[in-house]
Image 1 (tube, rainbow, N blue to C red):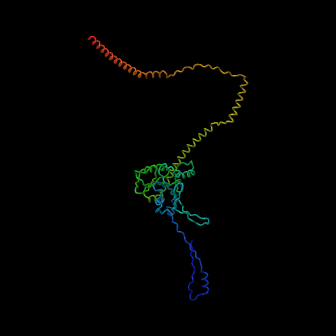
Image 2 (image 1 turned 30 degrees about the horizontal axis):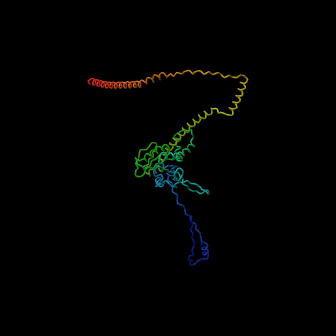
Image 3 (image 1 turned 180 degrees about the horizontal axis):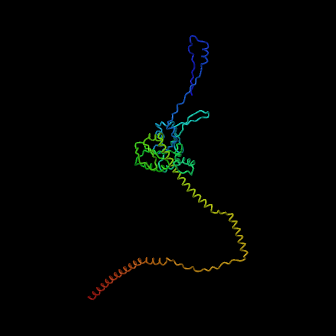
Amino acid sequence: MGSSFFFSSAAASPPHSHPHSDHARDSTQGLIIPSLTLPAALPQPTQYGKTLGGIRLFITGEGADDHDFVSSLLLDDNDDVVDHGTWEETREGSVLRVSTDWVEQRDLHGLEKFEPSRNVEIVTGRISSVRLASTILPTIHSPFYSLLEIIDPNCQPSATLISLIASPLAPMYTALIILSKSGENSIKRIEEDSLIDALSTHIPVIIFRYGLDQTRFPSRPHMSSFCPSSASALRNGLFRSPETLLSLRYEAAERFLHWREIERAVESIYTSNREIAHRFLGKAPSWDKAKWEAEWESRLSHDVATRSRENTVTNRPIITHRPAPSIVDPLYFSSLIAFSFSLLNPAKARITNSVSTFIQLVSDCQVRIAMVGSFCIGVGVGWMLR
């Protein structure tokens, strides 16, 4: 609120002035006239914004760290947004809370005021591998546990239950948007497929390709049916298409029920094993040391008194050491025969080698005898001729 001050100046008196007019002029000199500065009019929400409900988006991939890029992707030329909010850093990542409607409230004095509804939550985080993908699963599952406490454990999955879970006020994440500008043959394409396979069974996954390469690849199993081809298509699908938004919420509800059934099965198995172990331990008698010592001492005293009244002494029997009977191995003879047959081939080879060696020695000896005999005959003949 501002104030304007208008001070009356000493204007020229009319030709015929009256005394009372001079008095009135003196009384109005220094008069303060307040002026009010009204605030700027609030943006009017659209019909789509009023009925949008809650949306929770998790954005990752190439460019997710650029807040300006993410804001321009979802909020530029978006007439349904009435308040953009500011980015905040939390344990889950960078969070931007956007409003598409106003909430009427009253202050302590009963005056009306309008606050942004903050019904659209955008969370950004960079995930580069499947190992790091497991770090955001607790963030995705945190609203699952809130719903798990509300739903009756005996309630089976049904169309009514999935309709209740897919309501606009459900706290689950609506979708995971992966920003990508990679080519078909790049390594990032393989990491992207692995990331989709790791998270698509927990949250609806939307692939948004931007940049020069906007090639659309075949969708992976369990991906969302919503595949926007441009930023305007993405904005229209999330903010101006009730059918698309309802489809995403139903997909998120189906994934929650799938996770719930897995948790129930695991908990049932764990409870069954724990009950079996508890029954087994319950049947096993617990050993009391003090009770055992008391019973042992009383029983020992009673047995000693009974034995002493018999007035006899037990003689130790004379133990004669007898030779232990020979034990015949039933496999001894068969083993001996098999071992004997196994020695035939080495023995045959040894005998053959010995015979051949002997024959060779004998033949060498005969040659030597013949040479010596020839030498002697020659010497004898020469002696006779002489």
